[in-house]
Amino acid sequence: RLLDREVEAPKRILEINGDHPFVQNLTAIVESETGSDRVQVFAELLLDQALLAEGMVPDPSGLLKRMQQIMTLASKAPSGEPS
Image (cartoon, rainbow, N blue to C red; front, side):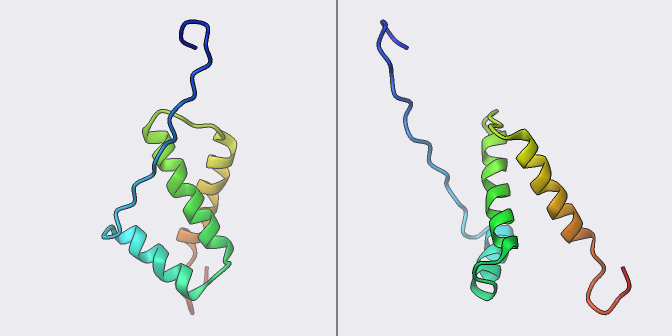
């Protein structure tokens, strides 16, 4: 509020570095697994990281859930090996 007036916050812009390995990997997953739950989790986690870097965590429990999902996926044994 400024001088007893509501002030609308400017829209935030998320800039993506298309050369970053994560973004390139995510693009490949999107192309091969359209509609995959993994794509949704990865995309939301990318946004979570950007918000966290800005000091904003609007949904801490959701962030933790997504982090746990990623850790579970990353900790699985490669195909053909016992987990």
